[in-house]
Structures are given as structure tokens and as C-alpha cells.
Length: 181
Image 1 (cartoon, helix red, strand yellow):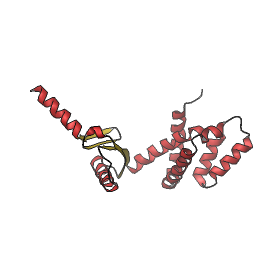
Image 2 (cartoon, one colour):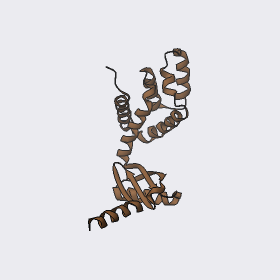
Image 3 (spheres, helix red, strand yellow):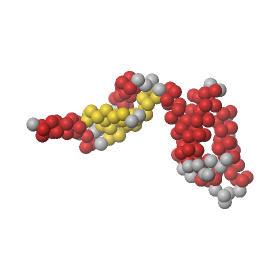
Image 4 (cartoon, helix red, strand yellow):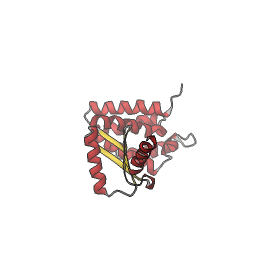
């Protein structure tokens, strides 16, 4: 039975995370995985290239050797196993699962903040600190989005929670309250 990418990603990501914790190397592994994620973004077909049956094994090995050259220990061995089991195209899902577990351990939240106009970096950092405090995280990382239709205020979405402080939402609430009377 062939497993889907998400199941494979969860299994490999969990195994890597547990190994990193066991070796007290979670932070170092996480940083190296961020580098690998950037490489995957720069070369979106990397996984397909490494699993392509038309390429000779020696060509794939040369590509893999170039890729793992900058990594040590756990991550290097992990990449070798991923390559050996022909799972290179599942690598982004593995990284995602590791990151999910890493963030839970370190109480890091990820989300979005939607505003009617672009946020300054200073305001974004203030909002991240406030969100972390309100939701009980050590740190929050928010991706800013701009949507003029909210008219003003902010909408924060993080870990399946939404705080809608938009002017449009407040006006809709007022409209609904007035229509009941």
C-alpha cells in the first residue's frame, strides 16, 4: 500500500523531531530545515528531479551530494534516508511536520494579520508581541495581508483562532443590531 505525501511527511517529520529532541539538537535541526525549505523554494522540482526514473543513479547521487554537502549529523543522515527511500518529493511535508512540532514545543504561533493599509514593521512587531501575550505563546509570527474591504482595524488569525477587530465587522454588527429593533 502506497502512503500519501501527508502521511509520509508526518511519519518522517515526527521521527526526525523525536531524534532531534533525543540528541538535544532541535534548534540546530530546525535552522537547517529552514535552509532546506529555501532550497526547495528556489528549485521547486528538486523532489521530482531526485525521484525521476530517467536520471541515472549516479546523476541523482551527485545532485544529492551537492545538496547535503552543507549539512552535518542528523540532517545529513535524514536527507540520505529520504533519498534512499525515494521520498525526496515529500520533503516539504516532512519539514512542515517537524516545524509544527517544534513550534508547539517552543510555544510559537504563526498566523496572518489583515489590515486595510500596509503595516509598518514596528506595528507588526508590536502586534506579534500582543498576540503572543494574549494567546499565551512565547512568540508569534504574523504574515501581513492588505484587504481594503475591511475599511480599518485589524483581523488576526492564528492557530484556528480569529480576532476580528475590523471596521467592516463592527459596522456589520451595528447594522444587524439596528435591524433587530
